[in-house]
Image (cartoon, rainbow, N blue to C red; front, side, top):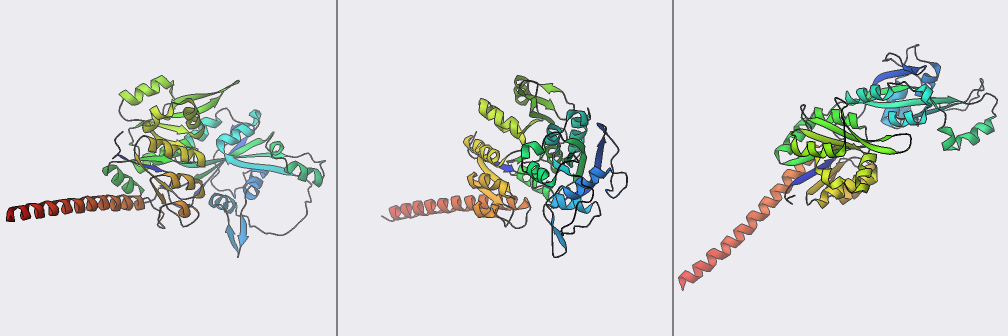
Amino acid sequence: MNDWQNYLCENCLFTKQGLDFLGVQPVKNSRFFPLVKDAKEASLSEELLYALTTCHSVGSLEDRLVGNEVEVRMFTSTGWELIEKEGEQPTGNFYVFCKGSYERMQQLSTPASVPDDYKSVADRLAKEGCYVLGLSYRKLPSNWTQEQVVEFANNREAVDESLSLLGLILFRNELKEDTADAIAKLKGGDIRTVMVTGDNAMCGCYIARQSGMLSSASRVILGEMVSTTKLKMLVWRDVDSDEEYDLSTVKHLVEQVEDVELAVTGSAFDYLVARGEIKELLLNIRIFSRMTPDGKVECVKLHMETGAVTGMCGDGGNDCGALRFAHAGVALSDAEASVVSPFTSREKSIQSVVDLCREGRCSVATSFASVKFLIIRVLVRHYAVKAAR
């Protein structure tokens, strides 16, 4: 790999701030029911409505809801009001509500409550550009005292057991107006853009295609860890056709076939690193999904080890390590990420990366021109003096 080639490791900053609530896909008797677009509808079960209104950390400040953007949108979709005052429990019923990635909710929920087509439905929704979360719950025994409930709540492992799946919450995050243009300019400057995100791989593929990072004709093969009865194994499959491949076939495809791009989950990335096989595939992987902060750092380091000039663009605390290790870290934030990053932009647009690359290349061109001028000047003076003698 030539050291003049540039790589930009991007996390998912392509979309607008804020999410639009699309609706809830309820699950009853281990099967999906039609999408409910308005959470105020009476068709929602009591448990699902309770989950939407209580499973969050939203607070109230000066008559305004504050907290995680996703949770605020989820709560406001119900039409309920947040009133912070102590009250009694007249029914004596206690519930556990749990919210998280749809993959994790499948693991925590009892198999009997999960539809057979759960993963295929959730993957399809994510592939269509939805931000998908799962909801599960558990009703505690009615004869428990409040002290027993408090003791139970302090045991996280026990809380996460024997949950029943309630459904999926769907949000939409639209692309920023300037994202596609910025990606096109980076491509025109011979800069390869790579998505490094904590989000779902299917959603990442959708955004990458919408932004132009991946062409619409590109064939995307996703590597993810799949659990069997005895162990976990790495499985590669086409995100559009679901056709599965082994590792040797994947290596052959990326070497011999055009328009084949790879995507990996965080667990698959860790597996490939541990097996020493990541370097052979690294420069063919376009999307790194479900990445932890440490995983992002490792990803940046591996790109740098190829000899490539590597930039990292991020907007949150999860990106701090990667921003610090990259050759050129760009924080699109005025929060904690900006402290460790060499460059900061408050515009929160990857157009800032285009501007930085232009300025950097102009600086290099100016420096070379200055050196050339000095060399020519010295030579001219030398030959002028020599001729005068």
